[in-house]
Image (cartoon, rainbow, N blue to C red; front, side, top):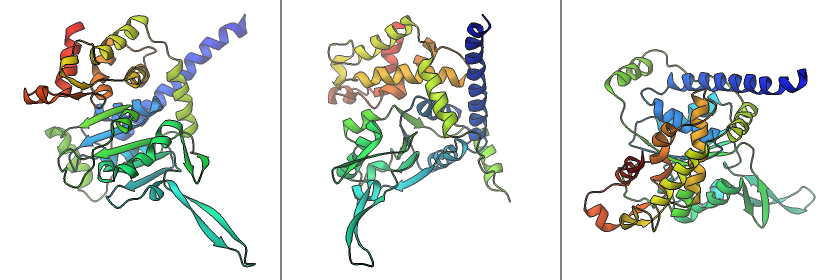
Length: 328
């Protein structure tokens, strides 16, 4: 009898320890990135769900600082690639080079690119050509790359956090729909409020600037990811997810405003990130409130409005909000 009771109690204890650990991670990130609590929560939820995030915001809103700090706080091997128009796929994935030994023998040696890491920051991803952007497709979906016909596994865990500037579009290439769909969430970063900016000034323009500290490691992260996937999600909430996604597809209630609709990855993204958000709050199951909070970030990059809808002043986020209001 003792053994049968130890399992659940042990699971609850492990859950609480992991929640506390990620609570400290959130606090550490908030101490270096000010006024972006929701952004931090969404990025952590993405990582906990095992996915990738596209951060969209104007210059100077701490996108790079957040990703760099996240790598330190989570103890991940982090690499950064600055995407430019002349960047080639081999600059990301790596390449084989021909080497000659002292004895005269020649052989190819593979040199790993920056994608061989645990956290890849793709800075200003839309500045690279579609060919280079697509080099990340296999890595993001299958956690491997194929070079010279040979498949090479990437380290675990593996996550991509990409940034994009929504203002300056000259010399940029829109991300293909297939690539956008690989991002679990698209998080919008807005300007901080006055008080947050005051804290930022005090923390970053003095004689000393706070540096992020490591709170956990890759094994802790992977344990938390397994815990999130094991969390229950109510049948009613599943129906809400399916209804919302169906409304934003051809044949749905919003179909007349859509050029294309959300695919099955939208439902998967919501199912996973809702549980991750509940985990970050120390709750054992997600609620409809989590769905309302995360629906825009999970759906905005997976649908496109018709020209007529845009001409009428409609926005993607406005349409999502309209569908949420219709059934909540």
